[in-house]
Every structure is written in C-alpha cells, then in structure tokens.
Length: 297
Image 1 (cartoon, rainbow, N blue to C red):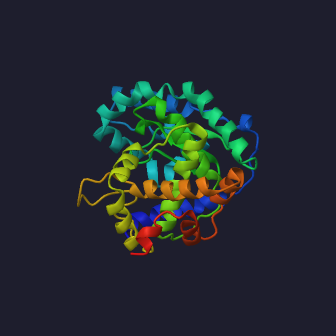
Image 2 (cartoon, rainbow, N blue to C red):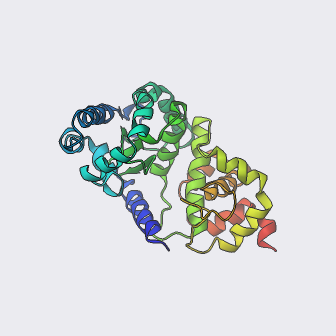
Image 3 (cartoon, one colour):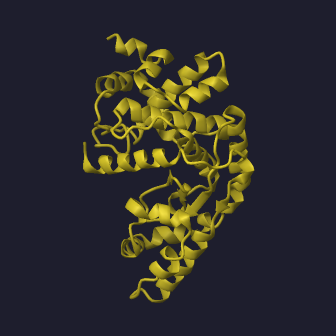
C-alpha cells in the first residue's frame, strides 16, 4: 500500500478511537466556530504587505482554536509549509476568500441535519464544528476535538451543510479498522455519504455517483475483483488516469451497498444503528444483496 494511504488510514484509525469520547447528545450543544478564518485573513493581509516575513505562525497557528490544532498534523503541518502554499496558490486563496467569510451563514442548515440525525439515531453525539483554512489538501476531517472543515477547499457555500453532515456521520461510526480493505473503506465512506444525505438532503459526491450509475456493470465487476485488497488506486483518494473515471468511486459503491441494506430493513432506525457499527463488512455486503450477481460470476 502506498505510504500516503498508510498515513491517511492511521489518521482515520486514531480519529475513530477518539470519536468514542463523550460529547452531548443534544444537537443544540454543538458550537460552530469560524474565528480561525478571520485570523487567517488577518495573517494573509500581513503577508500581502510584507511577503518577506511569515505571519502565519504567530497570527494564525499559535493563537488558533482546537480546530486549527487538529487540522495542523498532516495537513497545514506548520507555518513554513502554509506560507509556501500561500505563495504558490495566492490567487486561489484570494478567489475563495468571499466564500470562506460566509461559512457562519450555513449554521442553521447544518444544525437542521444534526436534528435529523437525532431522530434517526438518538444516541448520536454532537461535537463542535471548526471552520479553518489549511494548505489546500483537505476539505474536512475529525478527531477527538470535533469536526474540521477546510474552508479554502469550499468553492460553493451551499455544499457546507452536506459536507458537515458527512463528517458528523464519520464521528458516530464505530466500525473503523487500522488497515481496512477496499471493501471496508468503501463502506465506511459510502455509508457516511448515504447517512449524510439522509440527514441533510444531498450527497457530497455527485460526480462519482453520476459516473458510477452510468458505468455500473463494468465498475461492479472490477470492484469485486479488487475488494479484498488494500490497494485503493482508482477507487479511493486518487486515480491513475487509466480511464475517464472521477476520484472516489469507492464512495459510490459503498453508498449503493448501504442504500440496499437500508431499503431492505423493516426497522429503519435499527438499520441506521447497524450501519454505524458494522461488525463484518463482507456479511453486510451479502445481506444488502448489492453485487450479488457479480459475486457469482
């Protein structure tokens, strides 16, 4: 497995362990914090005036919230790396600035998704949601401190509630493994997409969904041949360029598996509980019925 994936999965495993720490199960308890965005732009404006010095340490990272602290390892990394990225992608930061300053406007819609999760899964916990600005390498993640959204990656403010919903589902999941197979990781991601859509009304991976649905048979055959491996190439977090597929088709196939499982369940709330704590992904797949025809080939 590529080193990048090993690092990524280690982060996932650590996050999943910490996610079991206690937070309130009251959706109103969650705090939506955007002050780090303001701090970043103050540092950015200092950089514009004097690009010879680095303001991103003292004016942003050092005074940052738990959100900035949580987003720093393997993402922002340090002030030097952040300034390097700012120099390289200066125009991109400038372009997205107006969008980042509107994040707070989506709090009510995000909280509506939190209320919806309360209906489906009363035991849900609601951590704080931190909106931060990083180094153009992560749109969102979570750890024991809460949910983190990389604001500079968001070009459409209307997608924020759907992204937050996806990360909120990840925060509830209990079925993480340190070195998951392609099947296991696809179900982890796809079930977050499915349940995130259930509570927010939209799926964050429309491109993968559209492409997958148009090429279902071919992709299902390929996935069945690969699903027990830990090689994610062309399915999760990147593509080789061998064809015209978009990234993250694993989300699409995990979504379909989860959807079939949910649709067949007589007790939908119990199904949500089971989806959040899948004990055996292969058994979950078989019970869903999805891919049955391809598994027999």
